[in-house]
Amino acid sequence: ISKVVTYDIEVTDEEQMKYGDTFLIESLKKKDFIIDSADEVLNKRLQGILNDLLQQRVKPTRIEYRIFLLKDSATINVYTVGGKIFITTGMIAKGKKDD
Image 1: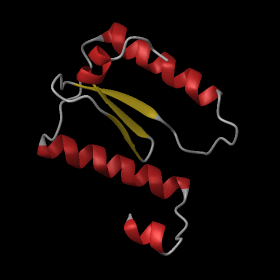
Image 2: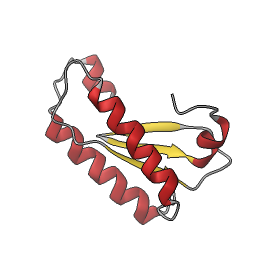
Image 3: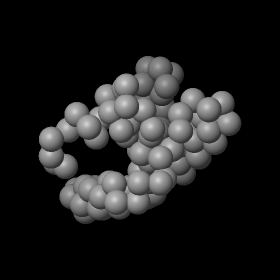
Image 4: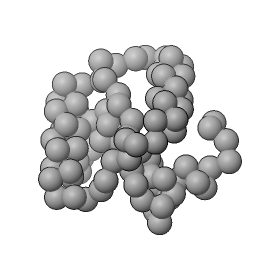
């Protein structure tokens, strides 16, 4: 990442998505996190928020975004890697509104 910033290297949308896919696969293998797919109501709500955000983009890219709820009530965090967005249950609990 530091070389991309330091040397002004251009990274394509496809390369970013490939990195996101690799990150997701490796994190699941290493059990770095657990995805909470059981909470269908919350996952649908998160998908709706993501859809609303994607419609607001001024210059859309070809990145295909997906959102994942992580079972982690101790951590208040949300981050993205190559079109994969990860939000912890701790962040959901801390937030008062969807916006």
